Length: 122
Image 1 (cartoon, helix red, strand yellow):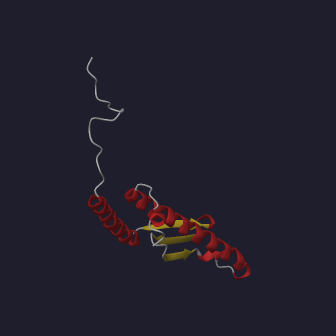
Image 2 (cartoon, one colour):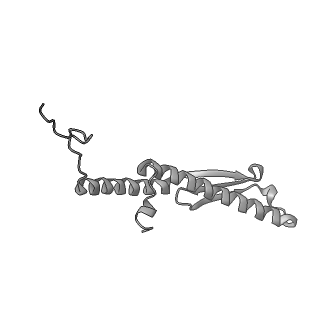
Image 3 (tube, one colour):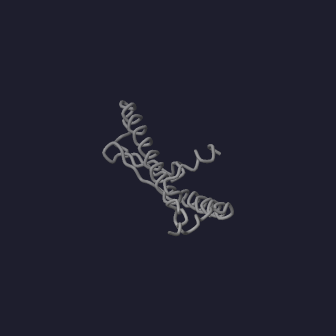
């Protein structure tokens, strides 16, 4: 009886080796896409209303306020605290929505990979 060579459960195809140059090229392409998306986020805006629509806040994908509109009926000198609370709530909601939008856009490029942690927060 002839002996058969031991195959060890391995595939007959050799494992494909990862070429560092291919990986670097993919990383550079992702960097270019991220830079383009960052630029686009500067132009995209989120509009948020607060206090039942009496305050409207527009913010960019870079978390820069573009405008705040306040209904004149909110301008009661005897109730400044209510206006301040409404502005804080509206601005915080706008920032959160802007950050969520930016994260979603960037996740489309990175596939959920946390690039900042991968690069040590550079």
